[in-house]
Amino acid sequence: MPGINLTREEAVQRAETVSVDSYDVVLDLTDNPETFAARTTVRFTATPGASTFIDAITASVESVTLNGKQLDPAEVSNGVRIQLPDLAETNELVVESRMSYMNTGEGLHRFVDPVDDEVYLYSQFEVADARRMFPVFEQPDLKATFRFDVTAPDHWAVVSNQPTPEPTPVREGVPGGSSPPPP
Image 1: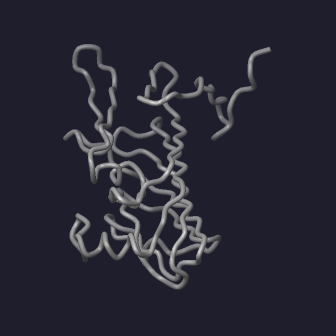
Image 2: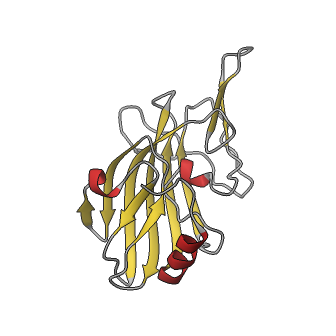
């Protein structure tokens, strides 16, 4: 098994193979104090027929779909990386995973304040820590756009250092379903 960190040689080889267009990341922070759900869609181009990997420090991987083909998570993921075989020129990767909350400042840091008993989360997205929140080609020369959709408890404030849309309440009992806009 490779080390947890990307080597210089791996970064050079992957940059010669892959060009990343976009990430669409859907996080659900509502159901577990240890882990959270991440659904990541990555669009990228590659050298046809090449293989590479995406960085993903996961608690578990439920599904991996590359260009519409299901890959067996037990065969392609090892908790640190997800192998991407036989790439096409244009690719879409969808990964359903569970990621671990951290209490070390890495990835998505989770803290329960003993004074108010409320849960607080933050991320600094330091280099090599985004892979603890969602699968990502984690190297500075593979830039892309990001879109995040975060489901959080109603009483939480979800903030970003970028402009964000107004929150949309989720209807009770309808996974992923949002309430209609007010009249």
